[in-house]
Image (cartoon, rainbow, N blue to C red; front, top):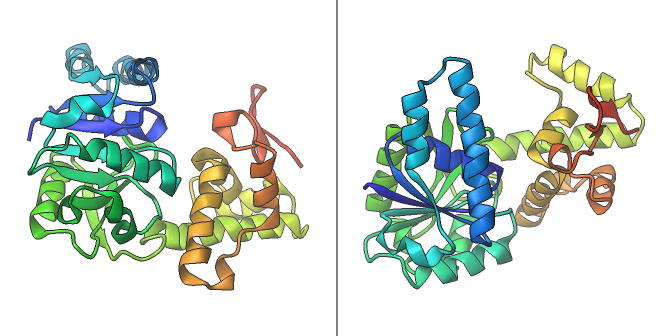
Length: 289
């Protein structure tokens, strides 16, 4: 397996492309346009430059990784890839359209994987060309830093498909945990209710935004508070995952907090939009309420 396809050149897709190229794979990187794919590669170049400046990697290693990333205009170029990873936004209809498109060129033995963080793999596999060669590979943000991949097997996923992904993860130096195909899998099943409950606490006036974050950061020994983390993940993504948990289980404990819904309706998605629970327009983040 030498050629990897990555669909989506945003934060997650770019991270997956970067670590794959650093592991020696040739990566075809696509997005809605060639310009977006090229912008994704330019962002990767900046990340690698930072690693060089910090003496984490050599300039030669940076150049080799960049040479291994090829922006392409569409998924039509991925017919020769042994593994194609979809890393688009967490919207099921978008992912299904991607699977239908790539299915027209996917090789007879190639594996198609989704980087979904919550959507059931068995359901997504309905849109894949072969459910036996379809699997969930949930990376974590930032991909170059986080050492985990959740591997989610659908009802029809074959042993050979699982073995292919595990070998790929090993080449990347990542640890793999296997999750059953249940809403939220492992990490988000545990994490999103915490973030959502922090949103309830904020909306109900239990404490200020900064005190909620500081209490959880120091009291739970977390690297950042849940509202700061939500901004980092993206409030729209947090809401989508919470809705998947709620709809998939029918359990009212997963109902989205009104304040989270309101912020997303306002277009305040967090760091990626410049404003979420905190305003990032200045030198230091400032609470928005």
